Length: 347
Image 1 (cartoon, rainbow, N blue to C red):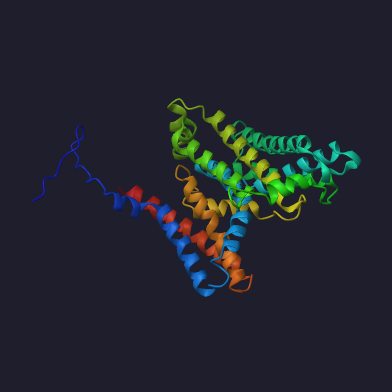
Image 2 (image 1 turned 180 degrees about the vertical axis):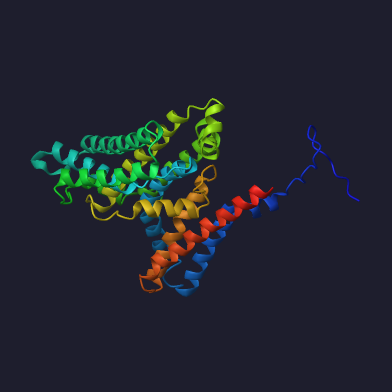
């Protein structure tokens, strides 16, 4: 018979150490990555002449960059067991603030020929504008103790209304050509789109913060058990404010990126961005119950709906199937998360 060792101090049986393979097979991120690869293979087989091309993957990366930046911020919020429904409208508000400020500082109210000084001010105001909404959300959630669903739903309407008031409901289209040519359509390092580089830098820094710093550890602790985190000495209120502030700042950055790519404020084009970001984060393995999640999982989760939509278009599948497919994947991800939680609770 195999000898059963006991754990010092409690006399219980020592659980066998899992192998590397077992840990990998138990990681949801690995399975999500397998799903993403499988989707790419399927669409490549269906349309070998159109899907597995450099142009397709380049446009896929560009189109996903803005959503990825939003989703990175959403990952922090959901890990704390919160939610932010306002990020799409904060994106619009930040873009409007950036566009209008550059327009106001330009001769004849036309920012098309604006230089880098004016562009820099527009960028700063976009990020600050997003950060203000994030700060408001954080204070109301952490200090006023209002449920984040209600707070961010209110910010959703307020940010959109503010953007419409500033613009009169008409999109601003005088975006500096330098901004569009450099950030919107510019490339670096042999053809890598600058938008993709910005999203990559944000993602890498966020992954480092979440997984290696005290800020990240506190984020997980609060999501796992807020009261226990508070009793262990973590300033929970301050930390939650900072998490929502971070999400707002990233939404502001996403708004400026969106402005650079489309050359307009696109007021009516982001009504589902908040749901898309939440879907990407949850599909990526971050638990809606808090305490579990990763940036790597979010990256994969964001690309699964994007690949589905791109693949359906290329394969000429009716567009009405796209939201159905994404919804099925989202529900499956939440179901898998619940199964994992039940299995953990039984141990």
